[in-house]
Amino acid sequence: MLISEIFKESNILINLKSKLTTEVFNDLVSKMCEIEDLDREDEIIEVLLDRESKRTSGIIKNVAIPHAKIPNLDTIYGMIGISKRGIDFDSLDKAPVHLVFLLTADIDDPETHLKVLKNLALLLQSDNFYENVTNAKSPAEVVSIIKDYEKKLSQSKY
Image 1 (cartoon, helix red, strand yellow):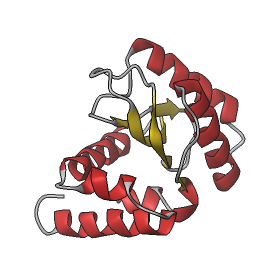
Image 2: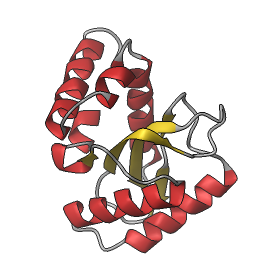
Image 3: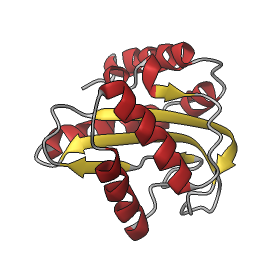
Image 4: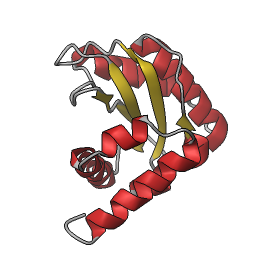
């Protein structure tokens, strides 16, 4: 599954105002559930918070990838949040997070979930991907950047 299929324009929030992890989860999950017509907001937030309490999702410099696996989802859903001022995610490197990729997947489809995480990791390792996304001025520009990088990666190892 392509990252650009998960993170559509409507699923990208530029200039995220949240300062704390819990606020970010509330903002992103609320918007995702509204857009995707999911009536599972509380369940998703609970799973995200539980996972975050065990291990931070801020594992890459200035990037967090919180993800929740819950039963009975028909596909993977996601949101991107971009914060100019940074969010305290209690990251491994203690640096603030400026880019959040939130994913929600079906607990019974670990293969797809892992493939999406792998593809996202490949994008994040690409030269200037982080800088280009965090400097984007609109959700449409973010989607265009993701598609451009996916195209480059597909020509190599994606």
